[in-house]
Image 1 (cartoon, one colour):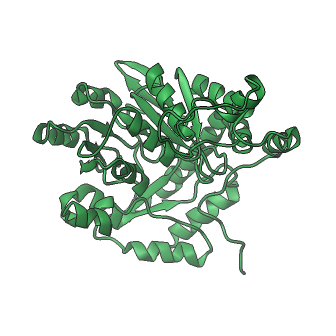
Image 2 (cartoon, helix red, strand yellow):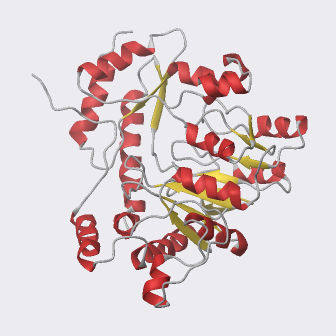
Length: 384
């Protein structure tokens, strides 16, 4: 009997989300305006940051963040090869050079020892760009220590809401590094369809990012037409078109209210997977670290070495209509990065090993108990 497909990810949209977007449509003001401002204020409060600047994507947030701290041609930024290309490509947008340090195996998070070695080998590295993976945070306490006076720009596309232990106390990601960048893409823990947010406690950096978000113009449209009542504006820098609309902000704002509840729902699914799959001899389940909470954006498992072929698992799930993904193909395996930086697969062996054995299972808020059991039953029947 054919069953309907079970997607790898799906946003959770309810009537409150629909009503929020419709209210903007009915207001007559669609682009960046009062709803965007409200979203920014509420997001800043939710993560404990002084400033939050809404943008059209996490990629835009990362670009603005690096530009605001003065990254430019010839500068070096250290990041992880185990991430989506957006993390690294924004470094190249500014003419800067990318340096990589490997991940730590079980957690898939940046290996702080490898970071320290990279900084010792090349003291000219100007900034660090860690990636919080799958819902857990890099050990920021240790990273802040090894970074010295270098600014840390966090890629937190997977990490809302996530808390990390700093000097014995817990802080929410978004209030830790110099600047933190979030994603609200359709598959993320909350969504605005497309969109992102950048947070900081630094007034000057916030001002710069707000300026560069919209063409380097000294006043946005809402302020010009609704508050100042004047048409005039001044371009003071060659900025970008990275603003978000009130339509997107309305959806993001509605979803933000449920962010912690969404995390609880995904955690319950992860716990069910843990309980049901731990007995399988061929699977390595994701691990949780002591220094971070886990919001379970991804459930990234692996096949154990010398057991079965990963494709056998992927094929079994696909035949039942279950969507999966692989996170991530390390950047040093992609043509551009391999050729520009003369990298070989074995240069970052931990990232390579995980990629060759990894598969991510469906985990999203609206998965039913039957959906979860469906995934589990297929995996239990995989021949080994």
